[in-house]
Amino acid sequence: MPAKEILYLIVLCGSFAFGVQAMFLGLGGRLIVRYGKRRGRVLMESLILGLCIGGAAVAMVEVMGLEPLYLALWLPVYTGVFGILLRGVYRGEGKRELQVPDYSEDELRKMIERSGLRVRKNEE
Image (cartoon, rainbow, N blue to C red; front, side):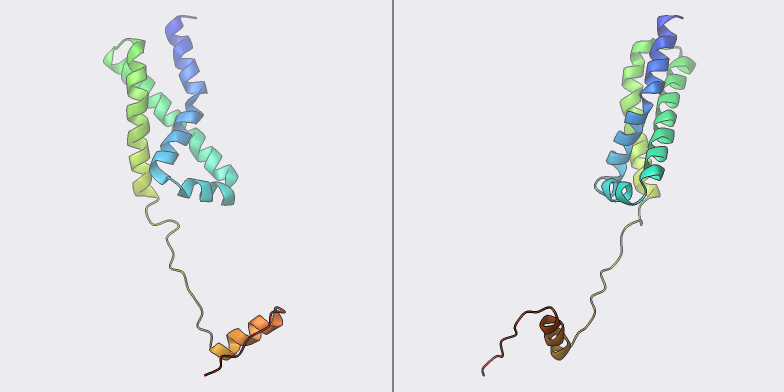
């Protein structure tokens, strides 16, 4: 097996890391929240995204007839591009307004008393 094909195989085997990096670039801290809720889905999306990044970089090097060294140039470029695309895809996810219920002072006092804490009365 030629060294060129071994390099391409190594890139495709390590493509999961490129997918995770692109997801961090695109989603930032929201990736951790998504991972906590849907672990399997995030891992699968990272793998698929990484295969797309690695495959696109390998295809670009082959189509343009470049030396395999240029693969090191195309991988970060495609990682950044896919990260920016992810930012647009998941734009509205996770943004919800916090709904704070309106409690009267008496209701709050009762909740505090039920929890076992003492309530001081204000002297006016």
